[in-house]
Image 1: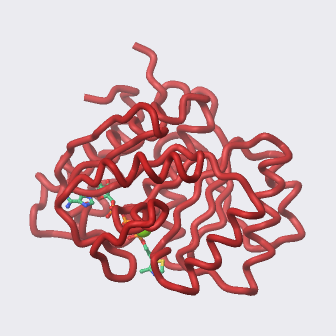
Image 2: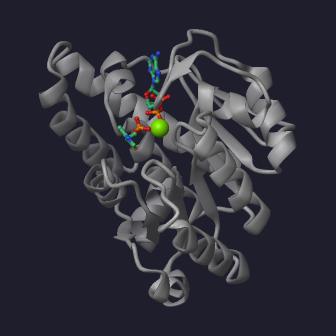
Image 3: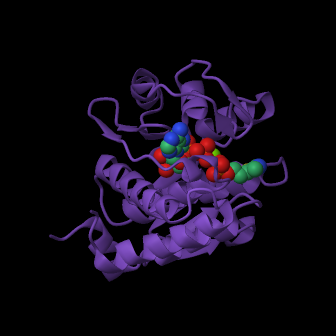
Length: 253
Ligand SMILES: Nc1ncnc2c1ncn2[C@@H]1O[C@H](COP(=O)(O)OP(=O)(O)O)[C@@H](O)[C@H]1O
Ligand SMILES: Cc1ncsc1CCOP(=O)(O)O
Ligand SMILES: [Mg+2]
């Protein structure tokens, strides 16, 4: 069965990232082990030419700043002009400075997919979901918030948590993998947003792309957690091994 993983391995899409400064190596590695090609940029002068060679763009506001504002706008607008899919990871968007930054950004660019935790996606739905900084403190799936956020923004939503909810505002999918080490791993969400970039680069079905990316990472997380349930350090290496092996097999169990 040809899967999107097959498409990624065959097409080797280039995923351009305006990454955060904390987890960019992890994001690059996650994109790479799938068979796609990561590229990170921090220079507004190269936005147009890099978007031209990209198959998707990922904007991560984890370490945003006024200095980086022109970069986010230039890369996002170039992607819109060149019809390249845009994924937004709105890290800790519930915080006031970040909220106004993302509000301004969405007045300047169109995003196709938003990948965030329940607290971050809740913000787009106008709902406060318990969280602190980069994390969401919830056990509920918050399906309604994800649907509302999709309808408010026009983007496909990939809301991660104890249950991942993927929706375009009309159809809703759920991914119910359970990997606690993934949940506590700093960067797992950023990695997933980068992976979503690789998947939307090879299909126009962003609902399927988001669902597949969440399924692949969730399953790899379960495999890695099983190999070392109390070893968050080893977990990261094992997670990349599992992602690579799944991509090589082009099969999602
Ligand atoms: N409570 C949880 N139980 C199991 N998996 C989780 C839980 N919370 C998040 N995950 C998984 O961890 C990964 C990162 O999601 P999340 O932590 O929500 O993003 P972020 O790191 O941006 O906050 C996703 O694959 C998600 O399915
Ligand atoms: C700790 C931190 N601070 C700014 S970005 C970042 C990483 C967030 O990673 P994730 O959203 O995947 O948990
Ligand atoms: Mg995050």
